[in-house]
Image (cartoon, rainbow, N blue to C red):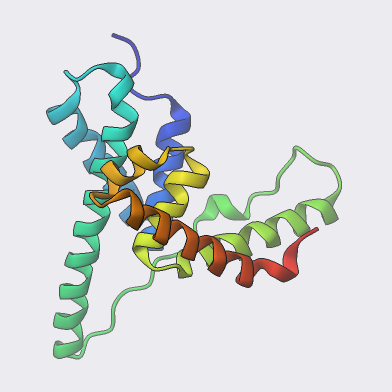
Length: 174
């Protein structure tokens, strides 16, 4: 049957999970759990449905992660234990050899960091609507199916996300 998903979808799903969790390892676990659950439940479905179904499973896994994390934080706070911090990803510090101009690389890296921070700052539903519509190119109906909500809700979440991001990113346009 060939490869289930192209590398690009896996990479983008990881990035989406990392935006949601803020933790590299948690994001890797979520994508792996999503792949396993997807294969178990939906691999017999027609290939053209896979992308939408995959992102629906990913959204559910992210929502479950938020619930577990909320409970864990409550318990740790009650016990008086601090939560562990996620270490910096060592691959993020490697230089980009694609462009020989270091100032261009630094500027793009700073812009990317500001954009990622702005997306992470969005409420979860807005973040999901934005990433699915703008980044993954899903249409309104597909996004509503993935997010388990109405098309009107998707429009609202997406509009609010775009408005918030425009406000946060006004100063970094090049």
